[in-house]
Image (tube, rainbow, N blue to C red):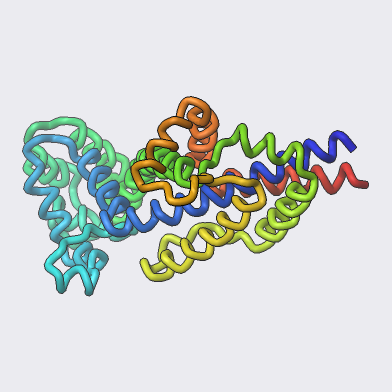
Length: 307
């Protein structure tokens, strides 16, 4: 029985973390779309690939290619005169643009010396980009299709690094969004655990909601529009409010208390709540997918304990 209670507390806590993470992730996705965070990250990765100072113009020419401009098209933003970098660049598009920009030929086979000459013209500083491209050219033995394949493999490697950059940035954003939530909802992990420990009815209600959410959970869809994300955020807000009511989260202010009085009351409680908020914020920064996988394991463990 004792073990079952511990698992119910864990499920309830993970459920709260997951709801808050989903809410924070939705807000982060809105921020990412409004400020083109993925597009900026992609541009940073391309700059990282061609890092010599004298290639600035060439990189700009790369992004001005019609193939990329088509991918960057945002009808509403374009009408407003706002330039939005593309979020995604397929590797075959990258290799097509690069071979056209650097090697300027449609032939299937080109002498290695000719290819290396084009590289020296494009990257006269003979830095890392120059050396990497020459290595890829030699590996291809002058065959353009094989060279494109080598360029695509290089691009994939850099995109793996860029993905980690983006994930790190998202974790930081989620932490600060999460911390704001913690203050707004008074989502103190220590208080949540205490509440779950002494309220079996609350535990059972949250376990039931957690099991339902785990069945209907869908991975984040980055293709959703801003309007769809707003609707999703409203639905999550209702779920969080319901869970908060069960746990007694939020703030209880005296009747008639002014805005500044409420703010002062919250500040007075910071020393008592700060560590619980930080724990919750760190949990939110791990992301909804992490907590979904964890929730599934604990629910399965609870089922096996019952048997």
